[in-house]
Image (tube, rainbow, N blue to C red; front, side, top):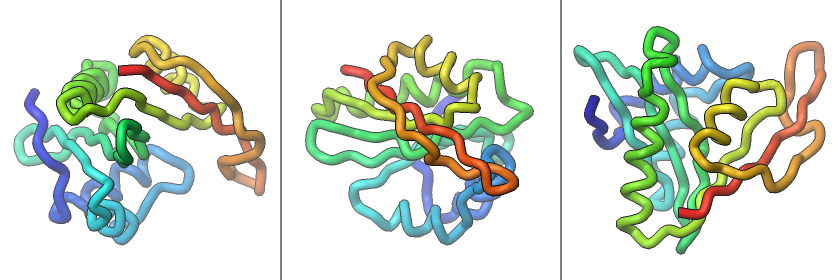
Amino acid sequence: MRTQKLTLTDCPDAARLHQLSFYKGWSEKDFEEFLADPLTQGLKSEEGGKLCGYILWREIGEEAEILTLVVAPDFQRRGLGSHLLDALFQRLGEQGVSTLFIEVAEDNEGAHLFYLKQGFNLISKRPNYYQREENKYVSAWNYIKKL
């Protein structure tokens, strides 16, 4: 599967996937605002004209932060997340970025395993960060990867 740039025309589909994947998913307007920011970029993967997954990140100097990585349910556990992350690693390396961060909700066990497998290391936890149902909160776990 090949990757290409995530664009403003992708915002409606990106928002639908994000809302399907997260408790408080981002809106189309959120994606438009992210992509309007010159420090924020995204890559996507499509099959048959359908958005299958994407990664959105922000770069500042020699550091970058993954804002979100989403894979459509029908495409999960098929290597698409790893493919998107590998494409990001390559792009960041070409641009001289040496450090990459990601923040993961404590209750997202699959994401923790995925990022550890990809060579990220846990560096800190932010208590009671992500809101869940019934006004409950879970911690955010912060990971780093040296590129």
